[in-house]
Length: 217
Ligand code: PRP
Ligand code: URA
Image (cartoon, rainbow, N blue to C red; front, side):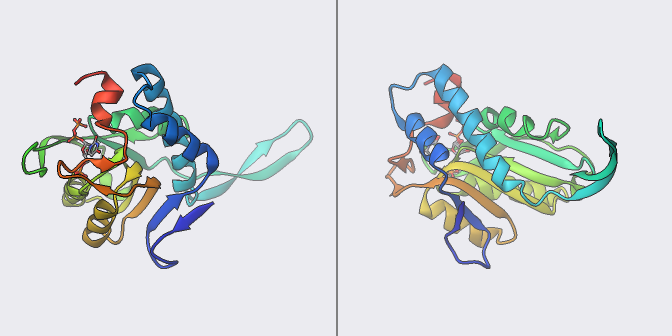
């Protein structure tokens, strides 16, 4: 089940599946160690990805079963691009590619300035032809929304058109900023948290997603 928080015409989808909620609660726990945290991020990404990819196109193909030959649906084309925002988005890639093993993978490197909280790009490499692909942008955290908006700006500058953004936890401020900047982008969210604090961290959140995935400080 998905709740569309802005109404049926809009592109913001919040998950309410109990498995996703349970796993997000485990992620939040400061006593959850790196190994378990990584596994949870991967599993949650797969569960959100399952919903987000509900509209992949199908085509009927001929298959011979042990009983008879039949026409049966399979995903048509292989034009999917998965684009994690470095670093923390990397933790979600394996969850999505478990569902879509033939997807091509791009990377966008962004970090938030600690004082201004504005994103700075340091890397961008996207699979071609990007304009023909369904693009799934991954980042566990949507805080101010600056990183997601910049990443999608870059992808559109490179020709990307059909874009979905998947995150695990979002702040209301970030959802609003991303949705206003890119209303055409479908936003899939594991959980909407209360607010940002003065350091632009999500409350209650889970802390610094990159540090928790990679065991850094
Ligand atoms: C985190 C997170 C997002 C960004 C969200 O990355 O993974 O990319 O912050 O914040 P925003 O919505 O306010 O832009 P960070 O910049 O800490 O980099 P990292 O993944 O390399 O740790
Ligand atoms: N980035 C994170 O990793 N966590 C937050 O709460 C906000 C931005």
